[in-house]
Image 1: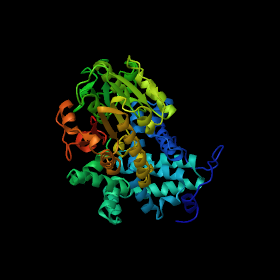
Image 2 (image 1 turned 180 degrees about the horizontal axis):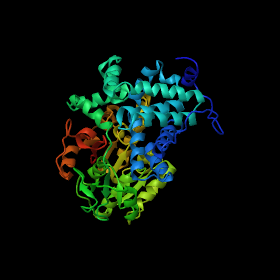
Image 3 (image 1 turned 60 degrees about the horizontal axis):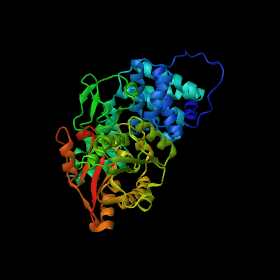
Image 4 (image 1 turned 90 degrees about the vertical axis):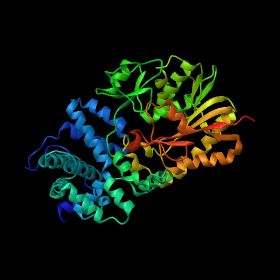
Length: 481
């Protein structure tokens, strides 16, 4: 490729200002596509979170229900399958995607998704992508975009998959290409499933990561009820339901936050702590890393019903404000500290009967909801977070009363963030800490039996098996001296 198209594949000039001087026809970019592009670009440029930014952009653009649904599909679909689309684009362009201007690459990814994974007409996908390229790139970028997307459209999605798979080097690379995950994530998932004797489920798991999750809500116990009109009961959590339809944020506002969006796995993680045994009047609980506050609100409601008190802690001030907002739904005095959680064992030794440690992690268990996370995280992040997780679990055990229970939770199935952290803590604490039968606790509180595997001292939930985020839960009890 040469001439103007060659230039467009490199770093394009700044967007042109003023009226067009060419004679090519102008196309109005549909608002849904404009919103999707803006969110995708913000994810790349400023590390925005699509699940937070998209609703705001949809509201600002005043999209109707159909256009909002289209914007959502285009945004999440493009971000989920970005790895696969980059391989297609590189093959069609004859050069690596790193040689393409980032803004134009966003346009191409969005166009590729429409051509290969939706029923959008080819002419609409191409023409509107060209217009987007005209608005965000150089004049020559429009020709490059037009030619490349038409080349992609001439090959079926099935044939593109065959071509891309033919260029892969290992089985894990093939799965990474086909299901659009980084290779290191595929390997981490394989290792975690192997620990359960379920390695054969790997492809099913990867496919589940690329499926839109249902909207789960929690009804804070004793404060709100879920009616049949709102949706069907959860499969497992006794405190929630699957939203039948409508705007969940409107429902949250109507209920003063007593009905709120919360993944079923997160509900189970909080309930594993609060229902591990009967609550004794006067118990003192701690949510050590409470931001953004969903689990804290559920624990606060459980504590209120059982005669316990809760303290929430969140070291990041902005997230601490989110915790306070979430806790406003519960008519109880719940202090929110802003302390470094790694010091809680020294500052509050043997002070709490139950502690939830929802540890900071890579978030690899929530790729359905935050698809961009798979492209942001690197293996080195696991090592850095593991150090923090180890410090936090040690501090949390120090803050437990003898006989107290710790729930160690991550939204990641990576062994280095889950079983590895627990094993290291148990080795350090020796016979002062004992595992509880976490699987039995969860089975006892679940609405329907959970399909669990591996060591019963820990529970790993999965999107493909349970329809939840991949939450890891372990209950540990500090032994009496």
